[in-house]
Image (tube, rainbow, N blue to C red; front, side, top):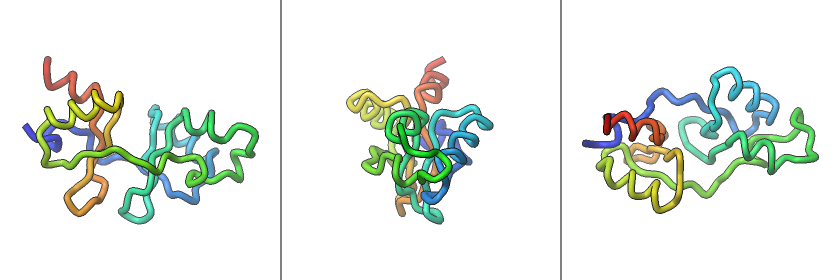
Length: 121
């Protein structure tokens, strides 16, 4: 089975220029803990609620940009990879979520532990 068959698609994203306040509001509204940061259709980083809380301490959230707090060094898999390969990568890197890219390196989705758990029900 390929990752694209079980991943979460239509992922909401945020721009690098968005403020941390905008990001936090979007996370709250969507009830999620992470947002991909994209310039156009290119993934440039990931911003988690942890990033907002830890990396931006002392900075005004209305002026601090997502680019300043995001994680830019990403671990990812491709949508046509086997689920077992992605699960192994998540285990090795101790990740709860894994960014999924198309072969032309555009954001395709996110693979989460709950996506994997649903596969083995």
